[in-house]
Image 1: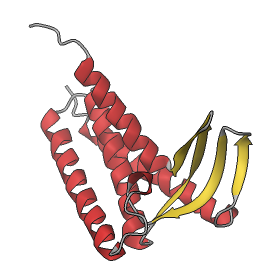
Image 2: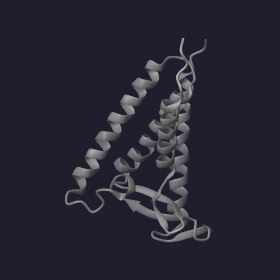
Image 3: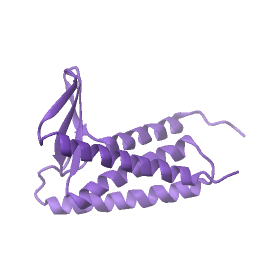
Image 4: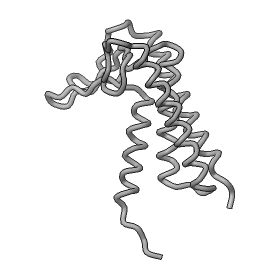
Length: 161
């Protein structure tokens, strides 16, 4: 059996590249705070900065550098843990290993922003009826899709051997 772990690293790298390219496009084409309506009352591409965590938690914290450094530290830890998990899963391809690769790529994408820019560029804005989802990005999407895949794998009935 050929070792497929390289494929997990490729998936993570593709997430990072897609995240970087999409954020660069947004920064170059959409003014801060402006938006392009894609689907009226449902979906817009925006340009916002998030110095906090997911869903803008800790935004405007009393000690923003401490929040930033904590989030960077957490991201580094998450990437290392996920990398070890991918390695331990062995050479075969599975939904779990793909999920971990998506999570790792997303964590690296947002960590890059926090280290280089001191904030994360968010640009996907979704409204569902009267609910406004906090703006997010490609890295966030990869993390959520990866987490959902992991959840589905955990809920899947196990075959008895």
